[in-house]
Amino acid sequence: MPDAPLRRILHCDMDCFYAAVHVRDDPSLEGRPVVVGGDPSGRGVVAAANYEARRYGIHSALPAAQARRLCPDTVFLKPDFRLYREESQAIFAIYGDYTPIIQTLSPDEALPDVSEHLGEFGSATANAVDIRRRVREERRLTVSVGVGPNKLVAKIASDYDKPDGLTVVRPSEVEAFVAPLPVRRLHGLGPATK
Image 1: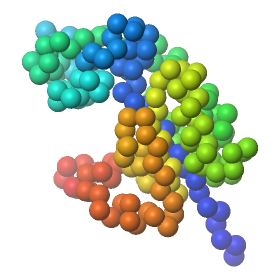
Image 2: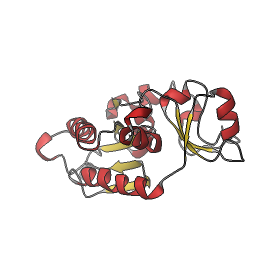
Image 3: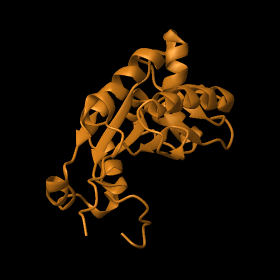
């Protein structure tokens, strides 16, 4: 029986997508802590926070009122899901130029399988580099990409060097890459399993 073909999976994860779209479209927000979510004077929660806000301990699912206490200078914006959907479609169209096999995980997260679609670049890593370049140039946003021999490794890798990172884990490196990581880094594990 012939060996199974080597899989090459990319995990493309937009960097603080909702907040980044607003900052891109409103230059006055550049360098400021930005939160997308509910009203901080009510019972709203944080849907997304840019890296400037995260420095204060603000993260998704945090009550918006608590986010305001952590950083009173935070700019709070209401979500615009139509805008995010349109932006997501434009970004996923870029991925589609590299492979027709794309698993969508969320509006800002996808798993393009380039195993049999290496194209003119000839490697998964080169495809990832070009995807990052095109998202930056065409959409004026950043995407972190993990490259691995399976979905789990690619997903862990994309989070390894955020924001705007690229981490490549070759098949021979999987054990050395995954073994030292805390169990919480494995996607899909709940608190009880951990």
